[in-house]
Image (cartoon, rainbow, N blue to C red; front, top):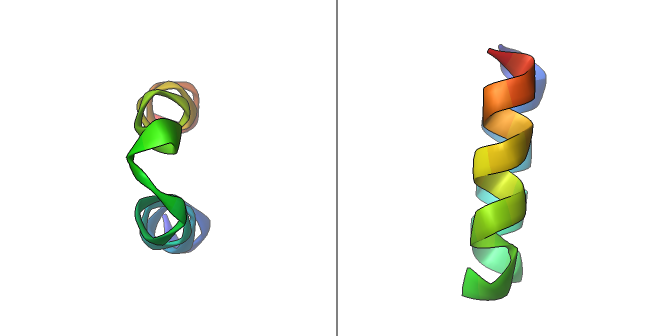
Length: 30
């Protein structure tokens, strides 16, 4: 849970181009 939150913020700060990756990572972590 903690890692997912950090990853989400990091990805969002990186840019919208990583939005797809963020969704993919969230789905896998879920």
